[in-house]
Length: 381
Image 1 (cartoon, rainbow, N blue to C red):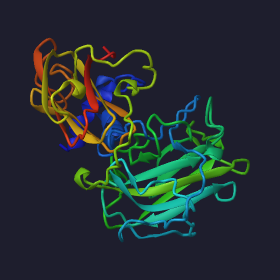
Image 2: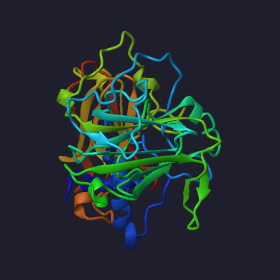
Image 3: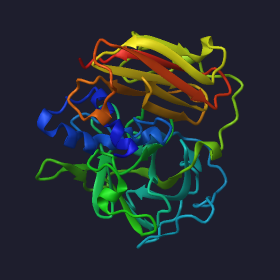
């Protein structure tokens, strides 16, 4: 049982979807596991592309207009993933995808421009099984992404398998989107589509007007009336200890103003069962404990405005792990399930509903008291 598989129980915290029926629950949860694999990317759970519905729901981050910086090399990493495409595409003159992003290092960057080049294809050899793809739209392409249905669709294919579709709608986290094989939850990991370390991988990104396939699935069609650019990059994970953290700003983001999640504005921080706030503790680093009565599903909300790492354990079992890499302010969420929930033991804690449990928060690497954790009974039940 892998670490990610143990975290499948947190899929039930998805507010926008129904809990699967008993017969296919585990199979569905396995297909959704990649939505929680943003643990490695610093908790950027929402920075993925989701399937386009009647209302635009894609979340490719938008690149704001700014003066063009001096040209930079496409591959700024040490000799890492060599690339070659069937039809070579020059790197963008600007740098819309940063060299370092949420625990990852950029090893490759390419750009497609509309309407001239609606498809971008390149091949690279991965050095890591946990690489991610970075995506960022410019303002022209994003102009008609909201409100309402977008006028374009982005399709990402890896080794001839479509891993997801989306558009340039706004993201719930600042900056570019990072996606992996679980972009639309069709797959759990890269190996599911035959990707192996040291073997060439072909990535194809296509942008066009949304067109419905006979099976009802959307795909990009004609791009002649679209304008803009989409930047695509390949990122390898970097250990937290080696990640170049940004310098502390003169003014910190107010922790109380960081949004916990979409639609929660004005509802306050979710801490109905308790909270641990570094601002009221002797040190921002260390072990902090609270005793709570276990609900069927315990939701855990973590917000931070400073770089650092947080682990959450329930009666000694780790149920959540997050890393934060900058000072912009970000929140993440997970959950723990009580023993009677109908999933294998590895997905749950040992306590039953109504029993007292000890919640332990372990924080490290924080230079300032800039985080808090809230515990609340799940709204699903």
